[in-house]
Image (cartoon, rainbow, N blue to C red; front, side, top):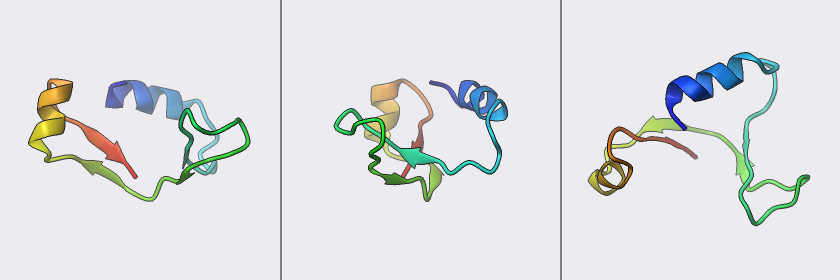
Length: 58
């Protein structure tokens, strides 16, 4: 997903909603944790793997 796609989806949602991380190991009512940081990655490995700029949510 590109940042512009994420922004488009977020614009349609409640701006007061909490953003959390939910991965494949969790059921619908479980989460890995809240998103506390949005960062432009400077990891050469990630940038090379993804073929361009990468934003990380942690």
